[in-house]
Length: 301
Length: 301
Image (cartoon, rainbow over all chains, first blue to last red; front, top):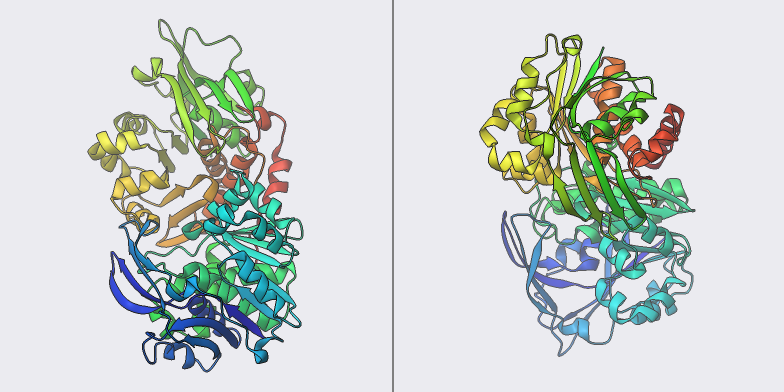
């Protein structure tokens, strides 16, 4: 099994009630890859600009599990930048500034050596580009994508077309409602699950997640934590751990999906305890296993 | 063990996307009592006015498990009335009209025969009145109260005084944040748990609930359902099943509280599938057990 992720690499500035991180490593495929690397090796495909600081991706490289040979440094382009500010209620954030830069240009190509990847995660980007990336794969066993409100509103047909070509979709509750026009998130998830091949995961942030697979609904709360420093990338970390677990086990049955959801939950809960990848750099798989055991205990009845 | 509930009895008119119920049986202690009666006999204390329709409480009486001898029909007074309208998103509702009527007068007295109740639920009312009711009990083993934003904002000292006298508090997430000034609901729950004797339950509606007891946090999602007809009273039904289970078992340890939370979750999820008590009238304990088994299955990993 081999796990590929494509998505954004960003230079993030984040302000939260806990402090501030300036020009920190961020982006969907960065969080995804680091979280997934606790479970399985990861192949990362993304683009940065010439301005990308030297050694910026070293934290990923140092895992020894993330293959960065698919990262393109594009001449004449600038790296994606995002500046966000979380409120005292960290569930609310403002985007202070965003510079799409290289993300507004053509997407990356999947290197020849990565085209045999069995497990693929297409982080949020234009659904047409996600479709193109799928076309570059030789033998995908499990293709999962993320999306966002922008594409639901402006590229609905392309997105609906994409759904038929993917095994799983990961999206948040407001996106699920927007995509279906249903105000009941369970009804929304069930409807989307009928459009994809295998499963839908609806992320609800601090309220946990829902899994729709095999005509069933599963639900998990979030890991209850007081120590929320920086929620940036939590959804990507969630997806990374989930996909990392599925790739590591080579399974995609309902039992495996439930376990993957639980791993996603606890891994994301660790990540948000620090800015950028800070907390991830300080923990190992054993910490994830310990938190999973705690999580299992606290949802038990 | 004997379970007493005091709270409102109301004549409710409810509009939801699923239809409309006019002058239906409602009120906090009505929902509570019916849900609790699946588990244990219940003693109900409340006040209605002279206008209360004949036979209005018959659905409660017909359970054979709810003692209505503590219901006062007050001469010259009118029954509490509430008219609410749920949006397409049933998590949002407007109060179209409310007539406090008898609820704005003096509270009910606990009949002599009920004063030896071991388990007591004080549904939402003025905290000073809740305190008075506690004073009428001879041998309470477990006193649990509900509250609301109005009392947190206007009767904070009385409410804080009450917390020291009760074993458990049940409130919703926005109330927990309001009471503590904390935006993190876990931090809020932990703080409130230090003020009461035993436990706090934070209800999050469609997002499940959190339990804070014995310095621990437990979390459950809601039972994922598409069929939401009328969420009125769901929080009271939740508390009713929870307290009914605790009274029936005579336990209040962490394991019992977790089970009680799960029973509260599934019982409330049944109640909201119909207007007023409609669904409850059509089900029995075996239906609750069946849904509990489904719930256990869907949160398993």
